[in-house]
Length: 331
Image 1: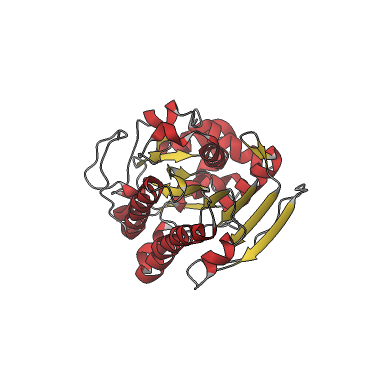
Image 2: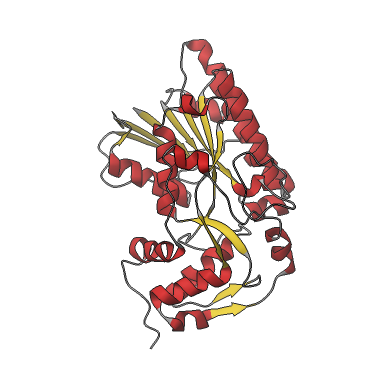
């Protein structure tokens, strides 16, 4: 099996490639070839013994998609995107990367089939940002799209494209709407949701953190470990079970900021909460106010997707996976 990951240098791309190499297979098919592509140079995970290639490419550039698809991979993970905050600030860049790059990829798959039959599995990382407005506290599987950001709009358009290209048999696609990934390791990014990770990640590293919204803000989250499992499961399942409803909301954990901080204290101690400074940011509060607070993801759960049990587990996963099980010494 040949697997292509677009967006392989990002946090999820790195963790996904590591997870695939660790498993060695998708379903019952061994991964023998791995192509990792991104705008910055990705790296092949340690331990992969098959054929591997790392490609530095901008998906919006002419012929970029064609070059990635030349070898006709069996599974394509499309993770490349401009994050929410950056897409809101830079309108043109957001649409170029999040929409035009995706459309170019879909179209190149269609055009490549002129050389012979080929129908790859395509897993697209969508987002719960496709929902917005005056939403109920718990959103069901049939709730309509009302995005209130450019990022959410771009993802919603791509979902419609994926469903139509799949309906026409061009590829076997599934779009999984990911919760906000928390705790996201590494340096802060430009995502408006970044503070949800920052108020846990920074204190666990012994560093101060800024909380730009009120403690009662509620959001839908999943750990990086659970998110990678979503992606891999999406590449394995029988998509005929979904018929033409190829876009699906992933399970998650609905928590308030206060509940996040309470979990941090339970897992790692009261002193870490003292490192969180409350400094309201009206711009971030405005964006966050239009986000979903909770879901009832019955379809995903019926198809075998599984979430973290509680936010305490998400904190523990970050400590285990990123900190070697160690907590900061605050004296």
